[in-house]
Image 1 (tube, helix red, strand yellow):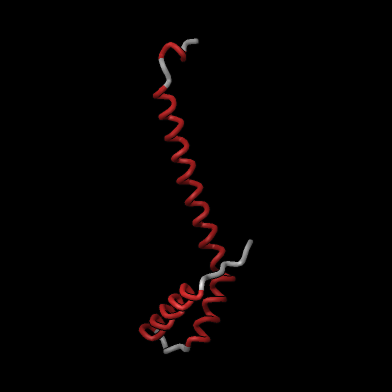
Image 2 (cartoon, one colour; image 1 turned 90 degrees about the vertical axis):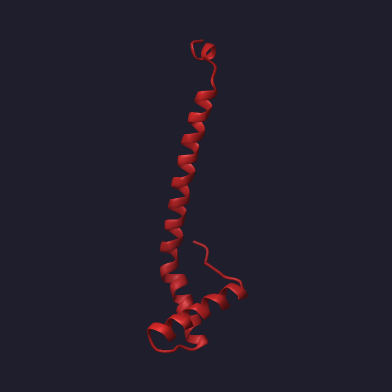
Length: 83
């Protein structure tokens, strides 16, 4: 699997949120430890979230394809169904 990477702006936003969480719920954390934590979660935990997202997207796609198949069936003309 390809490594999950973020833009500088995304990474700064995520690090800011991690630091805010630590400030609010735990002990304050610096920017560098927050980046290390982000890298750890991205490497070790991120694939679980990524794979779940893929499965959810696949299920949504399959459902839409089933709906599409039903719509095509409804468009068929009666004479063409009976040969």
